[in-house]
Image 1 (cartoon, rainbow, N blue to C red):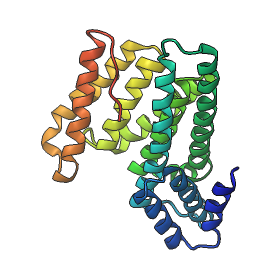
Image 2: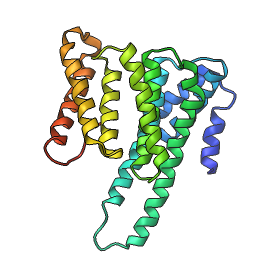
Image 3: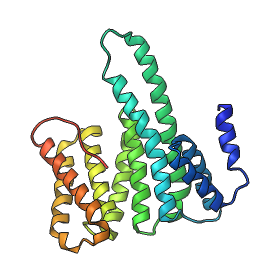
Length: 250
């Protein structure tokens, strides 16, 4: 660990929950997402020690922190993976391996936070938060499966998405944005990672059709989010049933 990162970690030592949340927000505003991950990790452990779950705002901060760090690394990996003309391929592959190791480390870190703390706190609640955390586990196992030929990551992605879908179908209505976002990402997992295009199309179509039927039940608060994800589901269906291309995901 670098001395700078040690200093960042030390900044949160001895602070109460409110002050740690304040640090998380400051890091977000400054777009210091790696620092944000350090602070939000501290927040999760403080609340877990008290048997408490994150509130909605804190949960969103957790998601933003890791999504930005992992998103940047995934983007870099894709650029390197696409190859370069007139460049040393061996050198590129070594660089790509460094990014893959970084990606795997941060993905395993957020998965550990979820499985050892947050998922345990809400297990059996049958609510949107339980779906949200299980979906996050599925997402980060899927991200690792993009560059690691490791069957256990693929299996774990599918397992967590299935658990999340079971809870969502029993407890969330068809137009709920979290349920729709889960269907979107799970269908992408079927198509891209598990190489099961029929299951991908079936899930996307079933979720889209079920939401269309209940469109009149949407409230103003979730209308924009839900309809956006429905559009992405439909776009993917069109793409998958016509020609190859880049999938949409939440």
